[in-house]
Image (tube, rainbow, N blue to C red; front, side, top):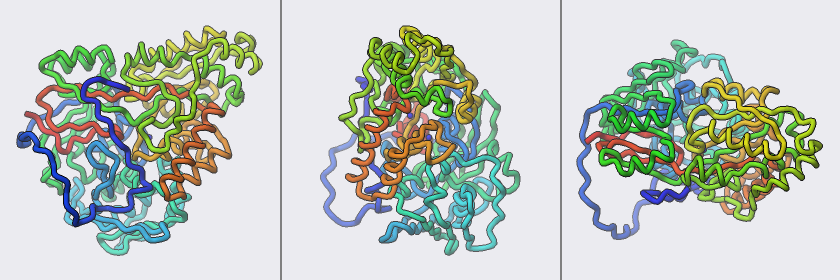
Length: 553
């Protein structure tokens, strides 16, 4: 499926899939001399970490979820064939120890890790991979190495798989022996190997899923460092250490984890200051300075690989009017929103991919805040000073996310700006799960909506195609349909050379600027306040909350 902080900001170079053609580093060569490092304390086992977050998970089956609150749990229960390295989207072996790509780019052969077990005690093997990934295929061209399983019918579409056009990419998945899986593609897809590290590609226990497919979403079973224990809806999710975890050299060190739901940012911060929780997400920007001064707390931060945006309901005839969209784009004072609500913990966005990502188009000028120009576009749209324009709805996010610290406050600011040019609007909001479900349905009662994205794999395709190519699938949340944009997204996926891909995505960003399918709002800095006893927690560009190697002093 989401900034210039003066303290501890880490700038990362995101590596795209086009260059990721090797599974393991090459041997040989003389390593560069490394600077002396300070002594690092030996990790200590034990303890319970309590993580305060703004909203509950929607579900815990990684193939069917799209939200960060679900994935932060999945990140610790499940694993994929390939991993992203710490603080990077560079790839390393995961449940696959290595992989090979055929010369024509159409066959991927994965060698699997032996001796790994799911939390229910069943064996991880090639058949489990075929089951986990194959269940998302519309036409299941799969082959097990043994008896395998009858894959149950899907109860709902696997949104990532569908929005990424994977049915048009993956032809067949075959277990050629117990520890070898072969993916055969219909066409070259440059991001494919990077995509296989994403949450949707996590490997689940087929045995647990078959027992009750509908219940699996609330009783997940994977191979990860932590096991699911209990879920009290809208309150907490409890996990415990997987004592049989295959990678004991890296953890887990914690005995237990509790993910508590505390909707109010300020309340989460007070709970952290009181020591009732160990870590928290998405503090109010005003609380960050207080956290820096508190001797019991520490803050880590990084420039986010994200985008927060305002979308238009393109299924509604009203918003097919380009001049009306441009009127909204120039009416909203995004700098004031970033300054006052993000409080400097972000930067106004010109494009819908972050400026740190390869393929970013620096030549796109962005939309200036210009009330006079906005009024001009509104008149050209057929609604001078808002006359004859019905009251519109502005759907505002009910939870803090990395790309939007306070959706309701942002919504109020936008309402004020729209009112200055004569557009009457009102805020609509729901609980997070309902918000995502109803936004996906694109009902006629929705006009504008706040959403955003934190990148999954460091590839522009994961932003531009997955979020905005409405011609790819009905599952794409922004149902904008543009043939030129759609063609470029196809070219981007089937072009291997990263330089050529970058030029393709620059053209796509220019089309987005010209057509204004969404209004980019901001790229944020991601901040994590925590008690000083927390050790070895590392923010990740994908916003994954990875606790495998975390320990408590």
